[in-house]
Length: 116
Image (cartoon, rainbow, N blue to C red):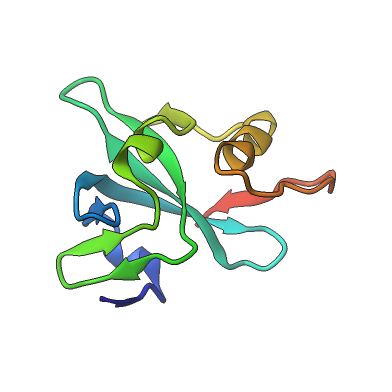
């Protein structure tokens, strides 16, 4: 495993938790609007006709030839805030995503996340 430098290169690959359990498939990368650095990824999870995209922080993520490993357990990731597979992240939902992972959202009036 090595540090995840360009997560865009891994779209469509399997995402696993620290124990190697498959969470789902990497769907998109969301960057912090102040730094333009990757902040969250969305992972496509669910069963046929019932897919959704869950948000997971990228801090500490690593990659291997076959998977992206995140630093959060599968159970935590599956319970994370989600959007429909063809949905958009509402600005009002951003604080909930940060709070779910006990991350500071801050008090800036502008959006913190942008899909890249």
